[in-house]
Image (cartoon, rainbow, N blue to C red; front, side):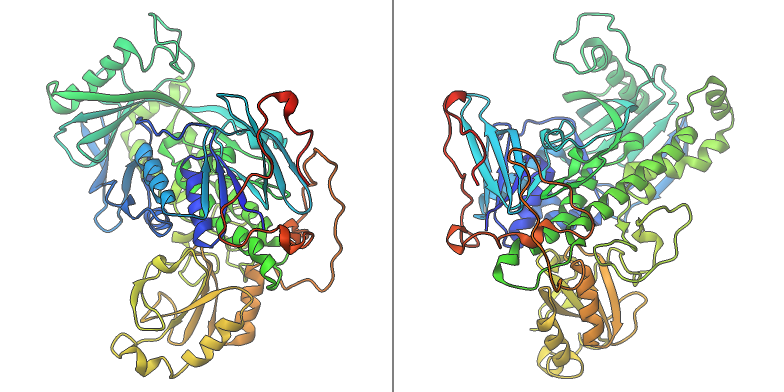
Length: 614
């Protein structure tokens, strides 16, 4: 079986490769760059779910490498409007370059991942059995053909994969504009702060968010429109006149002086400008090819975290690709909606965030003069909507909270009453009970079948979980309850499921009574619950989670035209179901073997192969 090809070695691409390795799926990561991770001002706010995901795929330093916020405050002029204590809800703030370096370090100990630098994708074709990609080395012009079972484009907002697949990327190009700087300085407060209409002149909104090692990320919201430069500026700046020369220094010094009373000693480390766009790819899947991260969606207005949603893309897609990839072992074939469920769930979740921003922007970013005046005079209006600003900055609520998938075609059974303002097939886990199908399960203490204590989210990522609620098991040693009650029957049921499953035991689960059994997907979302070890019910839940029961009959589709991507399959057609069935076993590398290019390089365009290998 050929490896999965991941295009792009940013945080999302690296995280996806590591997640697939946890499922014993080999990957080739094609990196257009040279592998360097220079320091910059970009950062990411991690919630409990994304931090746990990074930990279990091999980056356990994610928590220690980040700054943990004690509180978040919103100020207007000289008055504190809102304070949120974060002692019980940890929020981690991590520099993006440190995240990327940590993920690259994790790759060095993973033989199933091959990282290939200086590989720019120039051509992409797919057929019934896999995907072929041609890359060019930007330094010497050599070309290489690669063959994979599936391909995932994680190559950023200007995705070459998305363009080669001819997938539209509609949206709004400029929703919010910010200047950003990272500064090492001692401030008179320790919490993250958002300051509206600060008392110093020149800024309408400024924020300070702590990073590790005494560094702060400072953001300034800029007026709409593109200003004309008034002085010679750096030609490499993406927005001249904003983050260069005296303009930036004026913003830094006035802000620090306003907060500290006098200008403190500081060190300016990096600066950039950021234009927040709102874009959503028309499709996240085309045949055997997928989009994830910035290649699939862009949002960032109101402090929202597009990278955090990119990590959720990787978590959602990895287990689906793993099930499709392991078909060559002869196990039961998943139904057609297994891979389609990725687009339905993730595109729906991001689309809900974009709609939430569209609804909130008129309240939080008044553009007309009379609206701005009214907001300035009526402070109560701002106080009413201040929690919306905190959702974007903290990654909570409609702007960043962990999604739920109550009506996904990938197999979340049952129906959950629609939440107020909800559309489509997604909601928020925090708005639903913990036993509702599709929610992200809480992190609880569990016991494995040999009595080893662990955390529920630490067991995610390798297979499905069958969790039995059994009060009192923590009191007794494992040999007393392992062969008693429901445990023997539950072990038999787990072995007979059409998906790999591990049995765990917990003392209690919110909303679930004793002897309740929960089936949980590898990404931590609840498939459903049963009372006791009901074999038929659990079998039905597992079948729906993998896209439906095995098909009784099927017909092979003809190969796409050479040199063109295959047709976009409908909800009932899963190209992954045919993976590995059309080739002889002698052509497949053994599971765990190093991925390989399928042809040599060409030193000159005239020497390059005329088409992809078949």
